[in-house]
Length: 110
Length: 112
Image (cartoon, rainbow over all chains, first blue to last red; front, side, top):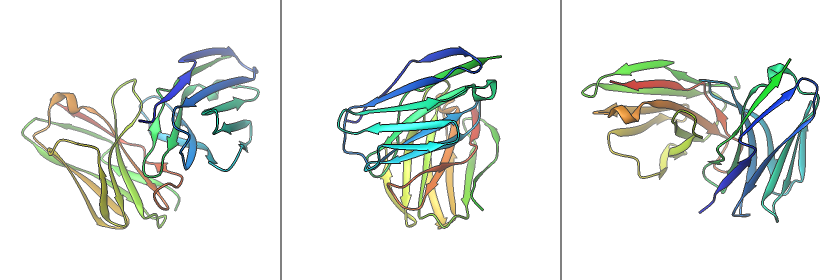
């Protein structure tokens, strides 16, 4: 059974810092991996999608990497801003559904 | 149109009521999903529809009944729910199974 773990569970940083969120998964047989952002009480916003054949994807200040063989992905956020404060969820897709990690709650202090 | 819409935004219902949640997308996606998210927990898959046919039911109680009337619409019919069913219900769609999923804003359901 696929299990997804995210570390740390919570993170508080001052504005302007670069930071890394970690995601690990137990079964490397995945189609893709998605990183999402969720604001309190809201739906999920897709940030980045990495296909299983890719090593990384970039969008603006965000960079996500994937090492399928070791079952790891990282989300790098450059020059963090207070507006980045949210819960970040990692999800792997074994083919027909998403399996989510518990998320990292990020707080960026101004 | 690149969004998934869900109605209503909020729903309060008693345990004897019957209600429905609606989800719509106009991106031509052929896979649609229902997820349930309890407070401070990640979303959990309930149902998957692929090409308007139910392909996955994650052992969801029969008081939840999904329906896919056409390729753009997905409903979730609710009957005789329990207070522990209170949660955020999220709909998502993708071009096909295994592709990038796009989520709607969710329906916040409270069962009294």
